[in-house]
Amino acid sequence: MMRSVLAATVLVAMLLQVAVKADDDDYYEILGLGEERDDAAERDIKTSWRKLSKQYHPDLHGESTREHYQKIQRAYEVLGDRKKRKVYDMRGEEGLKQLQQQGAGQQQMDPFAQLFGFGGGQQGGANKGQNLNMLMLVTLEDMYNGAAHTVKFAKQKLCRACRGTGAATKGDMVTCPNCKGSGTEMQRIQLAPGFVQQVQQPCSHCGGKGKKIGKKCPTCSGNKVVKATMTLGVDIEQGTPENFDLVYDMEADQNPDQLPGDVIFTVSSTPHDFFQRKGDDLHITHKLSLKEALLGFDSTFKHLDDHEVELNSEQVTQHNTVQTLEGEGMPKHHVPSEKGKLFVKYHVELPNMITAQQRSKIEELFPR
Image 1 (tube, helix red, strand yellow):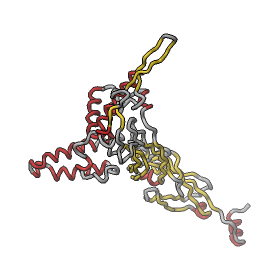
Image 2 (tube, helix red, strand yellow; image 1 turned 45 degrees about the vertical axis):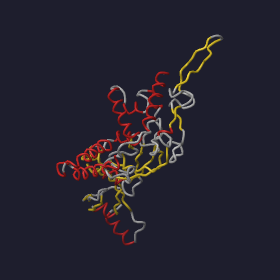
Image 3 (cartoon, one colour; image 1 turned 90 degrees about the vertical axis):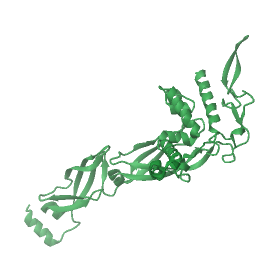
Image 4 (cartoon, helix red, strand yellow; image 1 turned 180 degrees about the vertical axis):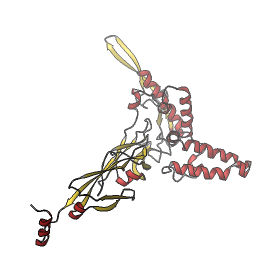
């Protein structure tokens, strides 16, 4: 256990040293997304990459554009991959190099977890930040047809200026005077009179990092994190079940020594004026006049995607009769070409009062 903690400490210390190095290129700037780096969606990154690839392709514009073209491809290789983009946003180019080294050397463990100083299994859960759970209310039409939403929320992000170190510059990360940069210290524990054991543990002065902050980063005041507004594109698929969890990996608050937690949207529909959903099936109540109930009817109504559904009968319809329409329910999640059933419950409305003439005619039709 102690070895695992020490290994984690050493890796974190390495990352802190890595984080203060300046990146050669800003991949967001290369793709023309410097101002939108926090809000850039995957489709924005791909669109910009395609446009710039054509603009700087050496086969079209000569060898002078080759170097910039290669930078464009590298930028898209990173920003077009969610995991690499997350590492780049938090640790920069050096973080990507570390991720590649961890991936090559640790075949049986999650290299992304290794990058943050811990492995998989039971230890990993303790080093991941809290999830952010949010209820997302959508219309039943959204669940039937599918829809794209944009959600904004407040979150904590690593300070971009110092890459989460809290130091003004890399020179302001000074060697810890207590542990001399090792990140560890020895503690003496008396087991019994005359018996003392020395135990190596993370340095109590620097938290096992081997470095301490000299001059604080002016952007985050040495806090290593800043408040930000996050924008996520949330796609509601056809047939999304009620209370369905949409999980966005590692999009919750960022902390220097933890993997970010997940953002989890629990999708639920608001009550509908006409339809009621039960699983893949839909239920409606259709009102009939006494005349329609006795003589038959022919009517239509608009479904959730605006297609017309016809209801008709030439027979007597009893009050609370339920008709089943196959294939007129909700699309089945992940198989939207298949749909559930629509149950139509007929409600016969009787008049509040009748005239003497109407009573006489009814008695003629229905003698006692």
